[in-house]
Length: 204
Length: 204
Image (cartoon, rainbow over the protein chains, first blue to last red):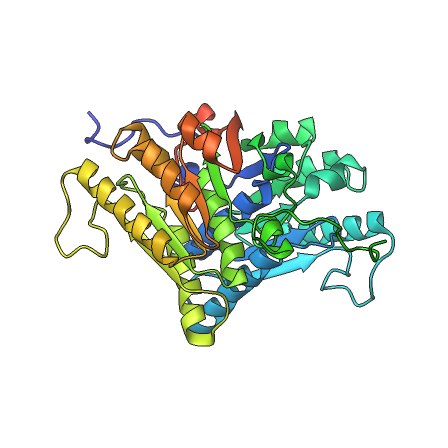
C-alpha cells in the first residue's frame, strides 16, 4: 500500500509532478473588445513578481503605443536592476525599428514583422524570457507576414518553461487549436457608443 | 464663419472640451472567464503612468490573493515615492482586516464588506484617487452586503475626475446600466478542461 498522498503511478512523460502542474502555457487573448492587451500586461505583473524575465514584442505600428504599460513595466524592470526584486523587463516595438536592429525604420511592415518573429524564435530557443507578450501578433498572422504553421510548430517545440501570451482580434483557428488557454473579450457596452472618444489613461 | 477647427456651439454642461473628452468612467469587467481582475490591474498601470493615485480594494477573502499584482503595483508606488514618477498606490484587503481598521480580522464578512464600501465612499468624496479598482465587488452586491442602489447613486454623484473599475462575475443589471464601459470575458478554451490545475504566476 502506498503512503498517503503519494501517487502510485506516474505518467511516463519525463516531467516531475511540479513541472507537470506548472506547465508553460500558450495563452491567446482575442475578441472585439478592449482588455486583450491590458490583461496580457496584467499577467506580466504576476510574472514579474515570480521572477520571470518579461519580453514584450509590440507588433503593428501605432500612433498610440501602450506607453502607460510600457513606462510602468520598464519602471518595474528598473526596480529589478536596483533591488533584485521581480525580474528584468525588455520591451520592443515594431515600426520605429526593433531596438536590436542597426538600421532605421523599416518601411516594409511585412519585413519588419518577419524580423520580429525571427528574433522571438531566437529568444525562445535561447530561453531568454519566462513570459513573452506578443502584442497584436494575430494581425501579423492574418496578413500573412508570418506563417501560422511556423508559429504553431515553434511554440510547440519551445524548450524549458516559457509562457507565451498572444493578443489581437480574429485569432487564427490554428493558433486557437494550439493554445492552452483562450479568452475572448466581448463588448457589452462601450462609451464610444454614446459618442465618447478614446481618452488618455484608458485607451492608451 | 467660424475659424477652421473651432466649434460653433458648446454644450451647456459646464465642462471644458478637454473635460468632456476625458470623462471619468465606471468600468465593469465581468463574465465567467479569467482576465477580469488582470485587465483591471493592467488599467492601473496606465493610470499610474498618468500620475493618477491608485486605490485597490480587494473584496472577498481569498487564500490566493493577487499577490503578484499587489507586489508589482506596490513596487510602482515605491518608485513614485523615490523618484516622483507615476503615482502613489494604496492596496487594501478585506478579510484579514482592512488596513485602516484598528481592530483585528472581522469574522462577519458582511460587516467587513460594508466597512470597505464606507471607506470607498469617503475616498470618493475626498477624491483621494484617480483610479479605484473594486476587485470582486460584484459578489458583495450579489450577496446583499452592499446595496446596489447606494453603489449606483454614489458612483453617479462622485465629484471630480475618478475612474472606477469594478470586477467580478454576474454584475448586477443596475450596475451594468450605470456603467460607461462593460467588458465580458468569455471562455473559449481553458487548460483546466484538460485536467490542468491552477498554477502560480498565471492564476495568482
